[in-house]
Length: 486
Image 1 (tube, helix red, strand yellow):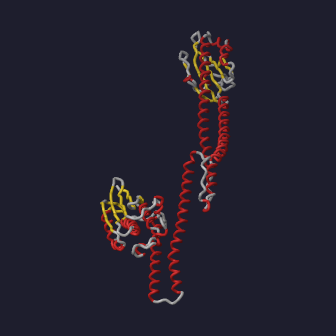
Image 2 (image 1 turned 90 degrees about the vertical axis):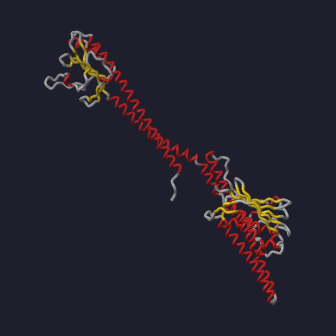
Image 3 (image 1 turned 45 degrees about the vertical axis):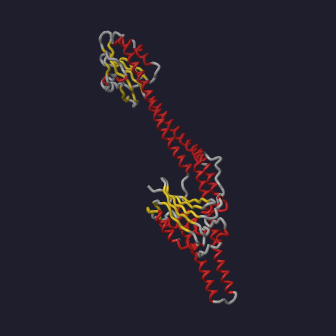
C-alpha cells in the first residue's frame, strides 16, 4: 500500500491554515465594517433628530409646522435613506418626507396617519438630550429594516409636537451582504491558490530528500564507498545526511571486517585440513606400522582440537555481538581470581620454564566467567611468547574511574604499528609465529587460533570497558580497564 504524499499532506495543512486565517480575518473585517457603518448611521440619525427638534422649537404653533415643512425636511434632504414624520399636538401627521409608506400606518377609521400607528418606540422628552441610546430598531410595513429616534419638541406656544427621524437600513444590509459574498469568494480563491502554490513550493523544498534517496539507491554491495553529497543539502538536513553517511561508513567497515574475517577464517581452517589431508595421503601411499598409524591419528586429533577451538571462538564472538547477549555481573575480588587462574596455568608455565606472580588488590564488578576467559587468553598468549626463565606478572589495581587488570610478560617487544591491530580477528604480528615451537608446550595447550585477543576485546566491550597493549624493550603489557559500577 502506497503511503500518502507528504507534499499533498503539507499542502492540505497549509490550505487549512490559510482558510482558518481567512475566516478569522474576514470575520474581523466584516464585524468592523458593520460596526463602523452602524456608528456612522447612528451619528447621522442623532444629528438629524437634534437639528429637527431645534428647528421645531423655533416655530409658534402646529400651523407653523405645516407652513415651514420645507425648513424641517431640509434636515434629511440629500440622503434618500433618511425619512421624517412630524405629528402635531393632536397626534396627527403634519409633515412627511421620503417615507414611502414605511413608517406610520394610517388610522383605519379616518385613513390619516397618527402617532398611534407608530411602532412601540422609546419617546424622548422635549427637555431630554438625544443620544445614540435613544435609537430604536423596527421593521417597516414593507418589511424593510428601520432605525430611528422618536422625540417630542416644545413649540413656542407651549404645545408639544412629535418628530420621527428614521433611516432605511436595506442598502446597508445589501452592502454588507455583497461584502460578505466577496470575502467568501476571495477566501475560496485564496485557499485554492495557497494550496496549489504550497504544493509546488513544498515539492521544491522536498527535492533534497529525493536527491538523498537517489544517492542512497546507488549504494550496493560493490559500491559501499558511495556517500551522499552534502554540498547542496539544506542546513535542516545536514544532520540527517551526516548520520546516513556515518551509517554507510559503519556498514562499509563492518562489511570489510566480515570479508576479512571470512577470508582469514577460511585460510586458518584450510591449514589444519590440509595438514590432515597431506598426512593421510602420505600414510596411504604405502603400508605403515601400527606406531606410524597411531602417530598419524594423534596428529590429526590435534588438528581437530585446533579446529574445534577455532569454531568455539567464532561461535562465542557471534553470540557476544548479539544485542541480547546475557551477562551476569557481580562483584568479586580480582586479585583472588587472578591467583586461581595462575594456579590453573601453573603446570603449563612450569613446562615452559616461566614463573607466574600475582600482585595488587581490587574489587571488580563483571561477569566472572567472561573475566576468567579474558585473563586466561592473555595469560596463554603471554606464556607462548615469554622466553624460558622469564616472569609473567598478573596485577590488579583500582582508581576512582576504573579497575585496572594487567598481564605483563618479558620477551621480544611488539612494534608500535601493530599494538592496536593485534586485537583484530586472525591478526598476527608475525604470521610465522603460529608455527613456531612452543617451548615444549603441547599444541593443545598453546596452539593459537588468532582469535584470543579478539575475544578479549569483545569481552571488554560487553562490560563497557577497554583493552590496550603497551610494549617496550623491558616487557609487553596487556591492560584491561573495567568501569566502576555505582
